[in-house]
Amino acid sequence: MALSITEACVNCWACVDVCPNTAIHESDPVFAIDSDKCTECLAEFPEAQCAAICPIECAIVDELGTPLNPLGSLTGIPVEKLQELLAVATRGQPAST
Amino acid sequence: MDLPVISNTAPASGGGCSSSGCGTAPDALSHLPDHIRAKVQDHPCYSEEAHHYFARMHVAVAPACNIQCNYCNRKYDCANESRPGVVSELLHPDQAIKKVLAVAATIPQMTVLGIAGPGDPLANPERTFETFRQLSEKAPDIKLCVSTNGLNLPKYVDEIAKHNIDHVTITINCLDPEVGAKIYPWIYWENKRIRGVEAAAILIAQQQRGLEMLVERGILVKVNSVMIPGVNDEHLKEVSRAVKAKGAFLHNVMPLIAEAEHGTYYGIMAQRSPSTEELQAIQDECAGDMAMMRHCRQCRADAVGLLGEDRGAEFTLDKLDAMEIDYDSAMARRKEVHDAIIDQLEARRALPAAPAAPATALDSSAPLPAPLPEDSRPVLMAVATAGQGLINQHFGHAREFLVYEASPAGVRFISHRKTELYCVGGDTCGDEGQDGVSADSILDRTIAALAGCEVVLCSKIGFEPWGLLEQAGIQPNGEHAMEAIETAVMAVYRELAEAGKLATPAPDQKRA
Image (cartoon, rainbow over all chains, first blue to last red; front, side, top):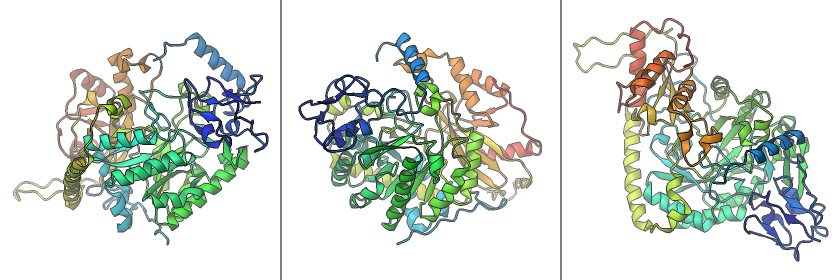
C-alpha cells in the first residue's frame, strides 16, 4: 500500500517536509514516493500528510490511480472551467522552453 | 516592550509635507520615531528615498507553502514575469549563499537579503534558517528580512530573533474570517487540511499573535495587504488601524494582480484588480492611521538589484559556478560604497525641502518667482529614472515610470507604473522577449499606463513617441535631464502655473 506522485507535481517540497516516514525524495522530473516506506499515514494521521498539504490537484494518487485531491477540490475553480482550460492548453501546446 | 504607535496624520492643507513626505524626506518614514527610522531609512524596501540607491535581493529557498491564496498559482513560472511567488530557479541553501556572496561582490549597493518564497519561508524552516545562519556568519554586512503569511509565525518567532533578523513582513489581508474565506480556500494546520471560515479564523489568529510576539521582541514588522476590490478593499482600513495599534511600523497596500493566463482562482474567475485611482484612495485613507508604503514593486521571490530592475539573469546557477568570490575584499569595497551612498543621502537630507514657496534667488536683483496660487490644482507627472533620484533615463528604455504629484504643498511620490504589465502572455512570453510585439503596440501600452499623468519627464525621447504622447494629452519633457526628480517636478509645476494652466481643470486625455 503506497501513494505515488504524478507528473502534475510542481516540486514544491511541501510533502517531503511533512511525511512522517521520510518516504518522499527529490527525483526527475518530479518528486517520488518510496513504496516500501509509504504507509499512506494510516497508523500516524487521519489524513495522508502529503495529500493534506499538496497544493496541486491530481498530483497524489493511490494504488488505483485515483487522485486524493481530485480536479476542482483545492482551488474552488469550477471543474467545467478547469476542463475547458485544460483542453485549450493541450490543443495549443507550445514547444517547451 | 512596546514599540511606539506611529502617528502619520497628513496635514489638513498645504504647509509642508504631505503624508508620504516631500523634499528632504520623500518618505512615509519621516513620521517614525528616530530609533526606528535609523533602522529603516537606508532599506530599499521600506524607504522610498533609499530605494533609488540601495539594492535588495531575494533567494528562492522556500518553495513549500502551508496555505492557498486565491491570487497565487503554484504551477506558474515565467522568466519574463515579475510578481510575488514567481521564480525561475529554486536554490538549496548552499547555492543561495553562493549567489548572495556573488551578488554582494558584484553589486556592492545590495544591502538587503530577503527570503520571500516562492512558498512561505516559515513553511520551510530548515531551508530558511540554514540560509540565514550561514549568511549571518559569512556576510555580516547584509541585512536579513523574511516575509510570511503568518500561519507558523508564533512557532518561529524566537528562531527569527536568534538569527538577527530585524525586519519581518506579514501579509495580512483581513481580520474577519468571513472575508478571509473568500481569499484563502484552505490551510494546512496541525496535520490536517482545513477549509473555509474555520481555516481563515486560524490563520488570522496566528497572524495577529505573531505580530504581537514580534513587537514584544523589538523586531520591526511591516504588514503587506493585497487589495481585492469587492472582497477586502473597505475592510483594509480596519486592518490598517488594528495592525498599527499592535505596533506594526509600516503598511503596504498592494494591488491584486489577476490575469486569466496566470491560472489563479481570481484570474480565472475574472476578479478585477483595483485601478490606480482606487488603490491610491485606499492608501490615502489608511495613511490617516498608519505610515504607508507606495514604492513597492511586488518583486519576484528571486529578484536581484534595485527595486524596479531585475538582474537575476546575471546570477543563474551555471554562471555562479564560474565565479570566484573573495568576500573579505568585497566587503571592504562594499563598505566604501555604502559610506559614500550614506554621505550622499545625508547631504540630500540636510538640504531644504523642494520649495513650493519661492526659493531664495541667488542674485537679489533677479525677480522672485511669484508664489503659487493656493487653489492651483495638483498635477501628476511621470518620471523615467534609473536610480540616484535623478531624471536619467531615456523614455524608450524605461520599464517603469515613477509618478509624482505636484501641488502648492510640494511634491510627493505617489506610485510607480510598469510599462510592460508583468507578463503579456502568448507569443511575447518566450526567449525572444518583446520581439513578438510591435513597437507601436508597446508604445500604446506605455501611453495607456501613463493615464492621468499630464507630463512625462525623461532624459531623452524619440520623435515618434513625442508626437503620440502629445496627442494623448501627456506633455513630454526632456529639459530636466540629470536633475533631481523633486526639484524638476516642482520647476515644471511652476511653469504650468505661470502659463495659467493650473486654474483650469485637467484637459481630457485621449487614449492613443
